[in-house]
Image 1 (cartoon, helix red, strand yellow):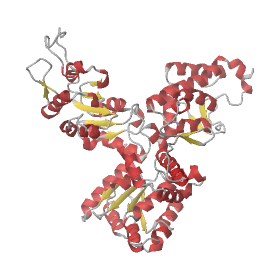
Image 2: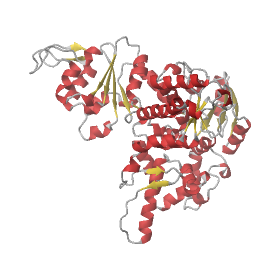
Image 3: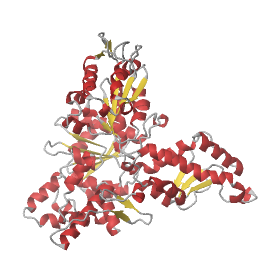
Image 4: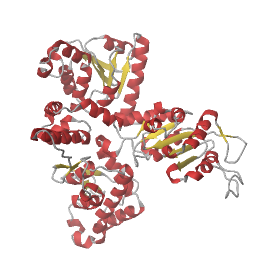
Length: 568
C-alpha cells in the first residue's frame, strides 16, 4: 500500500480516490503550499506520490508567491490575483520541485480552460490529466497513472539487462514507457537527438528487442551511402539495371524482412527516394532498381536524425507526406548528456563500470588487485563515489574509485558535444591513465610491507588527470569565441564568455546590451533555472526573483527564451 498526498482546496478528488482506489492510503487533503510543506516535512520519506490540483479558491494571503508586492502594484490587481488562483497548483509544483525534486507529482484539473501540458512538463511533473465529470472514468484514469508511476519508482523490470541507461527521472522513465509501447506496434518510430545520444543503441537493443519480431535488425547510416547507390542499397538491384550492375543484389529492405530496419540520418534521403520509401509505408511493397516485379516489405521501420525535420519540410527538403507517415506525433527526442544533470552521478557510475570491463582496463584492475592482495574484480561493478573523504572500510578488499569533487565538477560542467559516445571514450582513457602508473610503479607508490598501506582499495581519480585529458577537447580554450555563443566555467568557478560590442546612443545603452547578452547566455547554460543563476551571480540561490526582475528591466522576455529552448 502506497501513501498518497492530495493538495487541493476541495474534498472531491479525495473522496473519489478513497471510494474507487482503496488499495492505497490517501492522506487528508491539504489546502495550500504551507500545509503541504508541513505535512511533507513531518512525513518525510513516507509519501510516495502527490496529486495536485491546479485551481485554488483560497484566501489571497495563502496564495503563492508570498510576496505579491509587484503583482498588486499593477493597474489590475484583482485580475492578477485571479490568475494566481487559476494557476496556483503550478506555483506549488515549482516550490515542491525546489524542496523535493524527486517526489512524483500528478497535476490534475477538471477545467478545460486551464492549459497545463507545457507548464507540467516544464516543472517536471510525472504526469498530468484533465478529469471529466464522470467518477468511474476519472478514477480509472487516475488509477492507471498512479500505478504506472509507482511501478517506475519501484524500478522497471529488466532494466539491469539493458545497455541503455535510462536513469531515475520522470522524463526518462516516461520516454522508456512510451518506447516500450511503440516498439510493439506496427507504426514507424522517429528518434531525435544530437550525435552520440544513443539512438542506434536504443533502436537495436530496446526497440527491436521488444518488437516481438523474429526477423533480423538491420541498420543503415544514410550519410555514408553515396547518393547514386542509395536506391540499390535500400531496394536492391537486378542484373543489367545500369552500367556496373553485373549481378542482382538484395537491398536492406529484403535483409530486414520480418525484422527491424533502422535508417539513421533520414534527412540524407533524396526527395525521389523519399517518395519510394513513402510507397513502402503506404502499400507495404517496393520494386528493386530495374525490376518490374513488386516485392512485399514486412519491416518495423525506425528512423533517426539530429536535424530538424519540421524545418526541412518547410524548406522543401523533406516530403511532408512522408514525414506524416513516419508517425511524428510519437517522435522521441533523446536528451543530451548536459541535459541529464539530475542523473549525472549515476550515469558516471554506470559508464565507469562499463569501461572498467573493457579488456585492457580489466587487465589493469586485475594486476592492481593482485599486487596489493585485494579481491580481483569479476562481474560485480566497481563502486564509484564522489568526495574528499575516503569511503568507510565496508569492504576494504574490494577496489573502489573515488572522484575528487573537482574532478566530478569538471566532468559535470563540460559541454560534451559528442554526448555519451564521447563521455564513454573519455572515461575509458581516464581509468586507464589513473591505473597504469599505479600498476607499473607499484614498488614506488606502495610501502615495502603491504600491511602498512592504509587504503590500497581506494583509487583516487585526480583533477589533474581529468583536466589533462579534457584540455584538447575544450574548443573554448584553443579557439577564440567571437560569437558570444557560450559560457565557460573556469577552474576557479568564475564564468567567461565573449560578447558582441556595438555602438549605442549612450554608455548605459551599451552596458545594458552587454548585460543582456550575459544574462541570456546564463539562462541557456543553466536551462532556465533562475535559482542557479542567482547562485552564480549573487551566491544566493533564493534570489531568483531578483534575477527575473533585472531581466524584465532589460527587456528580456523569459517566455521567448523558454520557447527557443524547447524548439531546440
